[in-house]
Image (tube, rainbow, N blue to C red; front, top):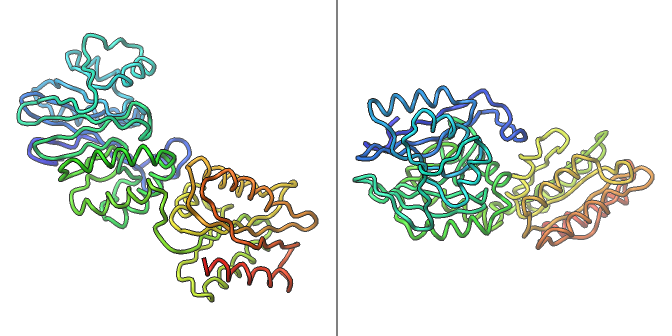
Length: 386
């Protein structure tokens, strides 16, 4: 597929993979993006996952024709992009591998090979001329591995952004479609490293960019401000919507019933965006995405084994790992004889940054009654005022 006259897409769509990185459900699959620049010198930017090896090598051979590749640019050593470096080097032994100082130790870790003598080590701002096209390299450490770098093609103003601006799905071309899965991708995979992403965005702001070519998802060609603004919001941990997520961990249904009632009270108080999420039936990656989306979070959970129902604990530990911050939170617990969920949830919240907790805690003993409803009404009012 042509991106421009001289730049080809040689990646592969994987519609069959159901779980990405062995943890994230991907009902619409994923792409492994790879690119080729045809000039006086020929450069390939990244390989693909081993699942797509045969299709990728076929694409490479078809795009090359009678030519030989001069350079292999390695943006990121994660196996979904770098799995075919070893075989590629055997098939094209004269190709120079381009990476940074942190790239090549990882190549030796992943592959039984010594690339010395056929490498080009680049650093921040270095350029590589292919003829009409000049590549410029910018380091992007911890976005989201330490060796990551991005490549800017100067003549056609294209940013090859590594995992940045990537998304799940093989047909996520519409902006709205991209935004949902790109948020889940970013917040779960890259989200911990917001400061580093902000640093990369500052570098990108100094470039004249006409197109973004990520390693997953569609090539972004129009309204780039939309995508850049999303990354600015996500990486600065700001909410996208003034609303409330009610995240529920219910065993027999009474906690869920209370959460639904709280959600309705919030709507009655004038909240236009209230969403109830069943953590027991929703993959945690979607929960993380939703929690970052709204500015307020209610945690409603049953007590379990003297602590909190496991799916709530898992949810909170994921939020902590992804640097959840700058939010308002409220607690609702249920316990038939010794409610303890709020204590555990509060303990995890206290380990996060810039979390404001709204009182009161709603404590339910088995099922809602007149007294717990009164406390819930007060909580709904306080949340709505916030």
